[in-house]
Image 1 (tube, chains in turn blue, cyan):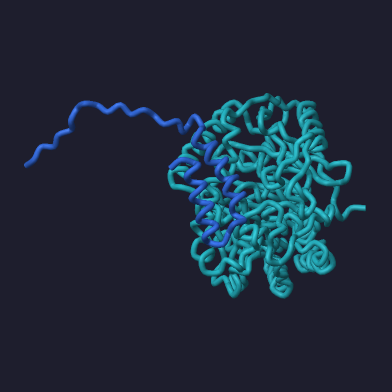
Image 2 (tube, rainbow over the protein chains, first blue to last red):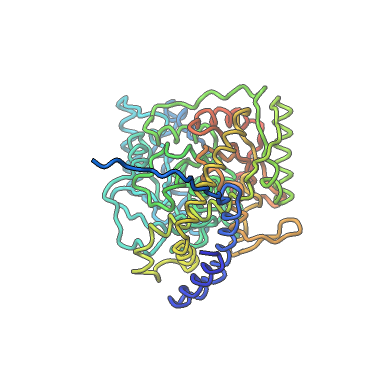
Length: 59
Length: 451
């Protein structure tokens, strides 16, 4: 889920629950999530799938 | 104000009794608590009974150790059998603890006298003690200011002489923050050392329990009693000449009130003059600390509070309720990412300590804020109070390293400043030895009862 989609969904849910005052706080949380996802310890790795097939012997 | 060590000497020399010191503390509570609101529950009758029992035992030759007969206050997050644990929240209305928290049982076994349960930021989820069902606690040095939090009532109780020490808890800095704000010592031990069984959780990933006291030696005595070692005496200080400390300047010294900075640098100068080697280091991922902390603490707290947020949301103070609700929106994948960040930060702090006896940095970047302030001007920028209060302490809750705050003087308006030492994981005793060596070269702040 992108952060934009997350924020949109979270704000909508907060409003539905009668908590519109959560919106600015959720925007602050979005900044923290952005930072965490951008951190170098969380860079997605490109997984190169091996072509080997793992086979299981059947009894 | 009397330290635990001094009281112990007088007690065993026959010059003072537990009943006397307990009565002095209770008198100060009666006089000053209406102004400081440090206590939610004063346990006067029980304290007097415990003190009489302590004196009887000592007279009969049964000495439980350094905490025998010592008046202690307890953050009202910790179960004391037969009393309510309010967590400063109406959510806990009607609660009565059936048994002592493990840490409290150890203090009881050590002969401590419980003078009362102290005020705190509701459910320990804040750094100023402003949001409490019982009203804000106030700083003994300036009652218009916060005593810090979340263990604000605890810090105020010791700084104002209402107890000789206190049991606090710490999730992002809630022992060291009030210690610095109130001009006393606060120790966050290594993660997991002091049992949190029987203490209302905020974040089981980050929660610690530990003492606030007037001196490092006193903090050491309470720390050891909390571990069940009631007879332990303070460790010998390390030789100060040749101590190796490291200041992580980038990030940790970037945003500092000018007077806090001045007191910090003066303390470093005194340490250097005493023969301490002080290097400068940087932590590569320091900029990620706040995000790592926030995602984990929010999700942990929301998980614990989910049922009561649904059933009785109106019983929370509004600011705490909103922050707890925020935690319900943290995605699992981002929580896991934050855990990865935690491991990286832990390794970076370990690496920084590999060549040094301790890290040294300020505890709070600002003096105690005015009650009600949401932002503070630091230099040319305006920052949210909450972010500032946590900025320099939360890392060591994330990584689990032991950390201690000691007073280093005050601002020109008499507000205390604190210095923080951080030691190796699992090496709280070594940190205490380093702190005892450094303490004589740091200046204590003015007592709020002096003059």
